[in-house]
Amino acid sequence: MVAGGPYGLEDLIGKAGYRGTIIILLLTPLLWSIPTALMVSELATALPCEGGFYVWVRRGLGPFWGFQESWLTLTGSVFEMALYPTLFVAYLSRFLPRFGTGYRAIGLELALIALCAGWNVLGAKAVGEGSIWLNALLFCPFLAMIIIALHKPLGAPLAPAQHLDLAGGIVIAMWNYMGWDNLSTIADEVDRPQRTYPLAMFGAVTLVIASYVFPVMAVAAARFDAGLWTTGGWVDAGEALGGSILALGIAVAGMIGALGSFSSLMLSFTRLPAVMAADGYLPQAFARHLKKTGAPWVAIVACAIAWAACLPLGFFHLLILDVLLTGLSILLEFAALIGLRIREPNLARPYRIPGGILATIAISVPPIALLALSVARNESEQVGTTNGLMIGSGIILLGVLLYFASPASRGKNKNREAHPAIPGDRPSHAPGE
Image (tube, rainbow, N blue to C red; front, side, top):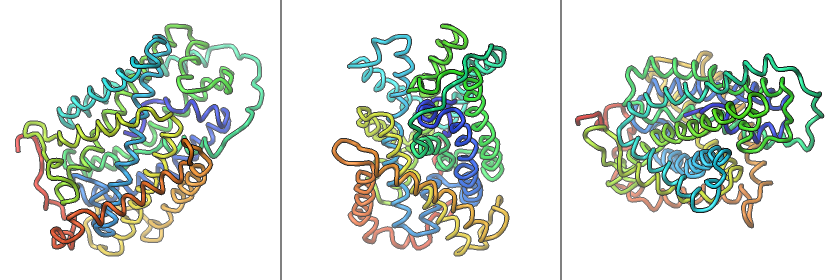
């Protein structure tokens, strides 16, 4: 859910150069990923419920902000989830160019969405186990690339990167390091969540940093021109270092990474409409689960259709809108973390961020600073006749209007929401129930 290999870093290298990319990749997790992982570890172990961060924000800040949390996440997902079919086709077209444009490309992207929807209907266990194998496969070509780069004679010294866009590069790194909270929405399908979540969070932080930094260091050491990096650039680097076989392996691994990331994130995002329907904010049909697998099949189908509708947008436009909307939802999660520390100091917290309330507030400052940078970058990015900030602002305003238009906000769930998100107040959808 956080990373499917170093794919997606190509535009970062092109915008920041090798030295800037490595610095950004080392600093961003300190300012963005680790604070988020700490927050998720505390809240996921205290409130391990289906719906995850929606439940945290609703309980910590109230039903209005809980609705906005889900709205921001789901609208951000509409932009994010269109990225992975685009990446899948981009890597396939490197060795089968006729599938890179036109109706063939759209057909492949739609087929990928349909395949992942079917996979998700099989349930969390099927997606989780499949993701392990996909990750192992996609890292093999990069291990080969690193080994080859270490033994390859150095090329000519590289010229300094021109036209650096460090702000754009940081936004790309933020996207590559997002997703730590997504695992929370399936907490009631996770074995021993109080123990599992902290281990998963901090083990994954280390693995993700390594999976990004070492391949970039390898191509930098081989002095592959940073100015040549565009989407799909890992294939060109593989060709330069190891010939056509390594290039083919990296292209196939890129397709695997896009498939695995899309399917894993679908597992997370589709739990939100199901929980919101149970709370009265969406039609009850979204709350339907399959008895055999526990999968919310109506939510899966509806989300797949929405994501398919955003396929025509370009990669960078999709990315910056996703970072803006998802980043705002993460800030609401930090606010819920602080709010629950104040409102419910005696809530059982199997994992607690050390240092008390002041330390808890302090770890939220770096993500706020990075989000401010993202807002500024959206304002300067044209999307059609407007800019990313205007589109994002319109989406945020629509979320406010939809909340007050929903029946649940006007009364029928008020008694329930006076004490929201008590673990166990919603029936589990475990297999067989």
